[in-house]
Image 1 (cartoon, rainbow, N blue to C red):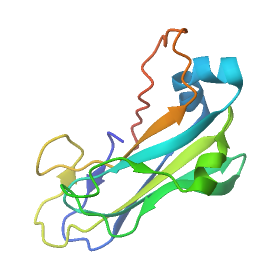
Image 2 (image 1 turned 180 degrees about the vertical axis):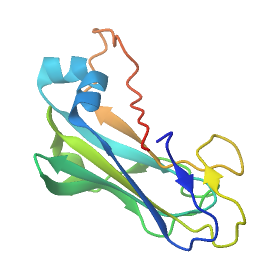
Image 3 (image 1 turned 90 degrees about the horizontal axis):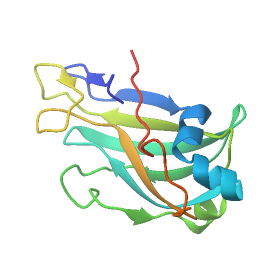
Image 4 (image 1 turned 120 degrees about the horizontal axis):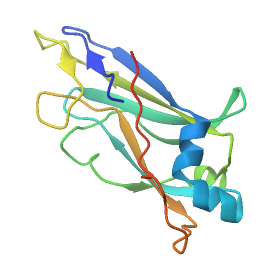
Length: 153
């Protein structure tokens, strides 16, 4: 979320954004057209040094029906900077056209004197979820990137 900005001296700043269904349908269009759904099988939940907790909720209609990963004691620049296999229950639930993802990150900037903006380098932060999914329709070109980005204000 390019709109991320964490205020200084805040012990538990919560940042939440929605990856809406139309953005997911743009990213997964060939798969949805070919098979109607995908299975998310692995996740990389990504923050930097002030990140403390991250989760991704699966939204269908107006209800959260499960999650696609959660790390409660996040370690930036360490062991949590890798992919992990989703729990069997989460991996069996399919992502379908019309579904959305709600990403929530908690940051601790209590030791910082200035706000922390979104960015890719040290001294910046991210709140991102990257997934491995199946099936992949390899014979249909993706006309757009299947990296979904958003900006909150």
